Length: 97
Image (tube, rainbow, N blue to C red; front, side, top):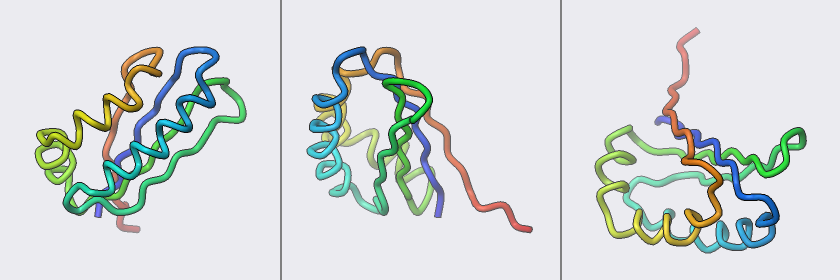
């Protein structure tokens, strides 16, 4: 299992609209093969900054499966207009300790 972490900064004054759009976008991405938990967290320190956490079985499920699908286009149509800058996306795995 990997964790996709996206940092999203939205345009000023679009908080309510973005969060409402994310509710719909979440329904879209949950249809993607392998998509697990989808979580949105809002920064308490930086206005308009969010973290999105999405669990996938592999990076390929995200990058090749979801990103190359019509679901990704719908996801971006819903939340993309709110972006102030392109999101930063990284993938993480559990570190064996």
